[in-house]
Image (cartoon, rainbow, N blue to C red):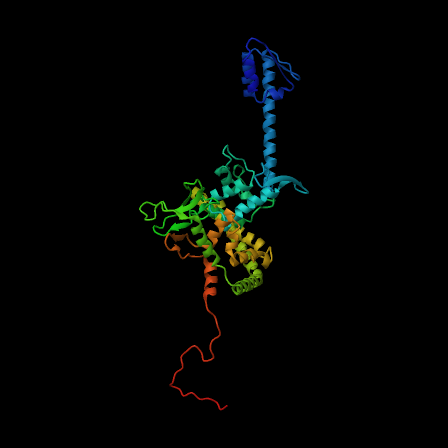
Length: 464
């Protein structure tokens, strides 16, 4: 309608006739109708309608106004009915709004249209949540770069996905099977659609996002210098930077170097090959003996069997815990109904929300933790392969895997001295334990024992 008025005003020397097929479409509501009539009269446009005859009389204007008011009433009634039906369906556990990334709508027998996982997109979202909960991704920036590599999310003019888009995806309870519509008073309602992640994984991801802010992974860490930001200067303890240097012959050479002020090694280049070869030797030295790996596997199997035997007890405990939490929630709801003070009502609502969160966690663990989803071999195969030879994963050359190896193997960054080379690295607990077993010299105890012989008691020998 705005475009039509602009067109009519642009041609003041001509007179037009505007035809509507239905008066109710023209008269959207009484106020809009009168305003539109004034605008059309101002540009000398004649209005015609197929089911109504306009008359420039008081009676004609009265009937026109009544018809406009009737049309407004019908539209508001239709809107109210649609909202009521939508609220009823959402209350039944069905999501009705535009599908979020990772979901699509499909017709399901007995349910009508409902959300279902959208193939590869659902797997991308699931990987992002599980990686964030497990520590593979530590910041939103790292999840954002993962999305930029594998997803088709909308991007800006620079080809980047906005942080707000990633943050919204990582904050949606819909992926954990919950529906929230605050304007209708619906909060954390258990939906009928299939969740992409468990509530426990979703909660861990939220805790990671709400925890201590971590610096995002540096953009200048590339395939050329995978140890940049991890290797420290042996003289000052600052992080070594890296660069390519051009020789007189025009050939490019890679170097690591320290850029800290006051450091005796400032701007003194270290060949990339020297640093990375020393690091790879350290990584290869962490490879345990085959007997130690067999022992670890046997320990995993024993722990697996114990956990399987205790599964029934754990299920009973979780079931009892969920029941107790529900009793507490019911008691607080009864008190909430009787409360009159706003501050008391707010405190009760916050307490009920916390208890519902704990109850969902217990129910989620009861649902997903009673029976293992995979076998022992499938669960620990990748872990054992990593423990057996972390250098093999490093040798693949993939930057993401290499950064993961650094986090999982080393407890803190490693120092490199230009004169003495790589210093002793502090490894994580699994490699510490395996290293202690590997370094220990084992053997049978001598028949004479480990204590020295004493002469206070006579030594008697039986006759041969």
